[in-house]
Length: 503
Image 1: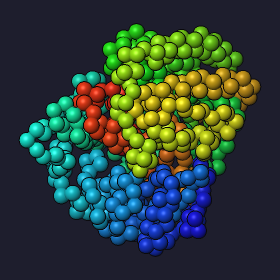
Image 2: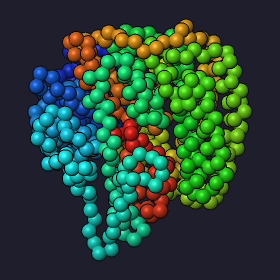
Image 3: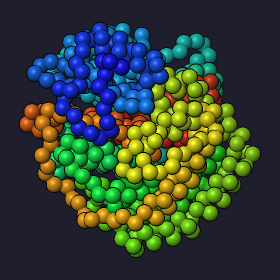
Image 4: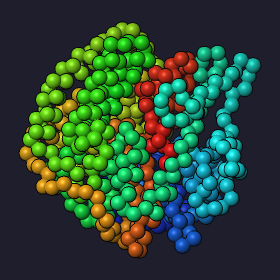
């Protein structure tokens, strides 16, 4: 670990403190770290004085940073080190026109011209509509056929293309192409005034408003020297758990519908609405928008809000337990859940899966425990009993997280500290030539924002990592050797974000 700098979640440091080593030493150090059970949090390029810098933030039980200078080509980590790097390197090629030599599957992540105006690595003509020059993996043989789904979806959701290589009903390979939305968030943020940041960041993924808002706010707090009172931390932690509850409960309902078990689907759908309403009680918006800001929260939680939330939890918890027992106690449901869409522990580890998808495969990482912030250092951790990597494991982990979140909110409601005052977004001075990374356990898993400021204190690079960036490949692997009719069930068990990916 001699070549790494150990850093803290949400604590800003001078950029000069990050070790900048030769590429050979960078490659050797990162390779050894990942082979020793390390994982990638951030891996991206930024440009400074016409020089490209590659910066890595990695984790085991701690966070570390290291950087190096690269040219227009650099040795790929994907081929010789780990598949954990494959999406990060493809993104670097797309954003900066730099080529990771030896990458085994180099093609676009999204679909846009690179930021630098350099020649396109992929040979694309971006005057043409997507998907453009995108070569799908193919399986050859007389009995092989392709099934293409999307990007226009039968449901009212975002666009994505799924291409199945099948032998009869058996899926040999699924390739997922995203990047149809062209939102340009990462490129946009450094050019915006600070007052626009919270509106943009809380819209990165509409079902992950609180987690992305927290990452942004904590980054600005670290760079701006802002403090947050205990009452605001309680509200923020409660909001993050309510967001987790809304999504896990909604997805258990969706899974119920996919196995044609309609009573739990209806009940969970209704109960999800109850928790959306509690987010509105807490912060004035059913999706948590407008609540979390650098320095605190925009709504003070008073006695009335505490009482409404406490009473609703007492009313609804027995209903959740009953409906969960109904779902997981049905033999017909378990027959569809168990051994469907299995991702083995070794594969999940190699891909670097995070969140409940990783925990369902026996990877216990939870950022609330490993890198606690807000109130999480004072709260109990969760445990998972079923970690076989299949749909049943992912559904059971969600059920356990629902009950755990209910416990955490009740603990937080018993805390007596209150928010001193409402805090709204203001222009603030950020530390010049500084770096900060924030990590939170969103409902899907590890959400991370990384900011670098220039010598005037302006944001030079804003890097966003949604957990879906790690986990989409996990969904593709879960369809290996499954029937194509299992896709909706596998898909719902992950429920990955399109918009959190299409940055």
